[in-house]
Length: 160
Image (cartoon, rainbow, N blue to C red; front, side):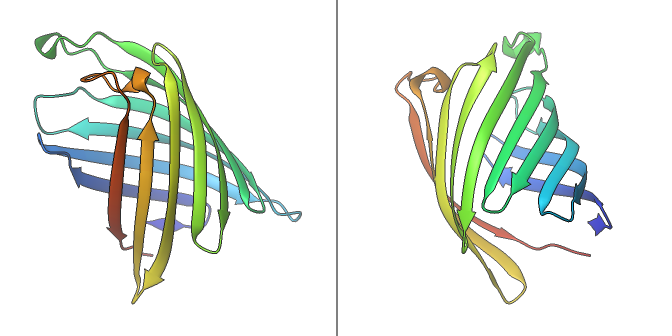
């Protein structure tokens, strides 16, 4: 949902052991020179007994084809799942042109590792369709410690 400079949204994915449900809101504006600034909050919730919630503050800056983001958050404790509370931050740089994009990012604080994503998105009959290849470094692969690659297909609909 978008109204002026404010937006609210939800995103859901089947992550094999349950659903991931993300809820987010933000305020953004663009200057006359084309510089965009944003601030928001995201919460990541899970329906299965495999992970605890993440809550984060999101800050963004963009100009032209470049976007920079900084996110700072907390992974909630769940003693039943053996998860200790952890603080993290994530910084990323994205370049986007004509629907194609590439993102490079790095995790810090209690989480460490690198992230890369390349993809393409377009609109078809009012739906946003996308495909992306995502790669995480071995530090972020908690199960095998070898890194992880994912091919993600997406479909979205925005309501105003």
